[in-house]
Image (cartoon, rainbow, N blue to C red; front, side, top):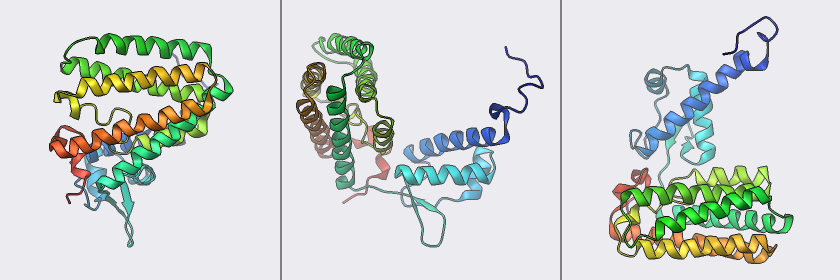
Length: 258
């Protein structure tokens, strides 16, 4: 355990601004959870004072958190001040998925052209081996789908790391934070579908193909595969909407009814 002494008492880690930033991050995470859980309904104006009371923090970090959530796309600013929870059309979600595919494609191309770190490539191969083990089962139960989601998110994170671009990584994080736009956004909805495992096997083949393209330094091929990979998510979106099983998904109340 570290002890506080006069030598470090004035360091940035102990400065008031650092504590304020930490409070803002906590407020941002809590507010995001409240929005996706439906505690703050789509279209509703955010009552700042009630949020202050509920979260037990001051108005300054709350305001900063609200501004960050507006940048993420979960909130929209109102003409007379304040914020309201955004709602999304099916087109909005589709465009967010398309944008993620575009950014991931660029990231994969840069990874191939620049040369991905050997260690990260090895971690990605091991991740895919573990996905193969999950998909080797003739039928996937809830636990297997949960394992797939975690491994799929890990693989996509490793792909982002391979590019070595903080700018692209930040943009990818931003678009993936939108409801349903993450790499595993629709996997859980498809869990009970007879075709779910088949869809995941196709996705896994694309994982293998893009990793091979990156290792072979084939940038255009790697980019095209990731663009095509996002189209699977588009198909899952249409299938999920058609199946009326969207209630299984966090944030579903943010999608406007037609």
